[in-house]
Length: 416
Image (cartoon, rainbow, N blue to C red; front, side):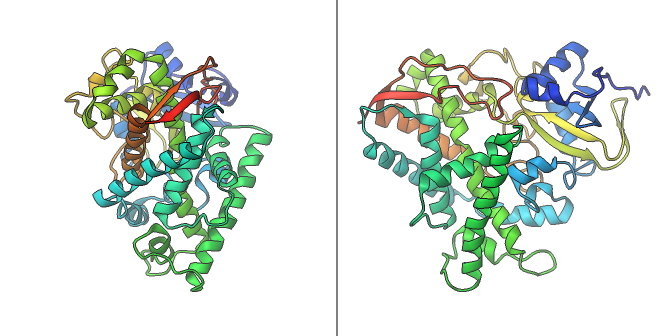
């Protein structure tokens, strides 16, 4: 068999990854005519994959591992050290179960109700004569939702400052210079804050609600029957709070879609919950969120004539997979109705990763995302009137996560 992968020529493509962002894999996929190619990133050989068939391979836990895949700069900002994203095998399944135990229907209903409550409270307190940036507003609303749901008190906290701190964790991993170091500083502050709460729970100074993540994580035991280290509990609690706060990126893209696709937006006035979800899923497919998932080859193997060597860094193109022409009709067209009767697989729609929720590395919080964004869209369409003033709706494909430049400003708003 031919074991030679198509190759992206050049000594090292790290700067091009930073320059091109979400387009990096897609552009080479088209130029090379292959869903698999080899390049060099961060000084090492790297395999890039795109499309549902390649995604199915990437999420084969017998062939790929996560334990040493994420760059340290990502661990130091986005994920934290020792969290579930870097585990494999039985340790990963056991830790993942801790998260999945929170994802029942009652919990989703509660999150939906909290989301609606905090959006209403936010606009009740705002001066209607002052414009609102939806992206920044969502950070505050969603931090309130995340902390109340997780059982973390915000009493006495500067919520805006904490929201900015948490958002630094997902705005800085791909950044260079000062922004990256701001993310590391914010990670330290956030871990000090949450870590202090965990310590107080274990010391009996805080009585945590046994039904909340704070209690369940603080008293969770690992496979050896030992309580998780307090630092690990802290990281995992932030692995709930941070992604819920990061849904503010989707709110910005919802606002962008309401402006860019007004004919589709008008249909939402009379839409049922199913049609609302079509719109949300098309936003998640069409617009960028995070560009790649990362793993390392865990054993030598061959796949479709290509040789994968143990230890090789491997990227799955999330954005490109959601636009792959083998999986999507007219992928460059915003068309919510494509989700009418659509059959999702664990690999053809991967805005927050793919594979199994329960046993794989697909984001456990994807259920939460849908609930929070559905309630947000319903609020914007049915509970609030507003206008988009002239602004820059554009975004940069090398800005990760990509957020419209003026953060989706609205004005002349009024609660119905």
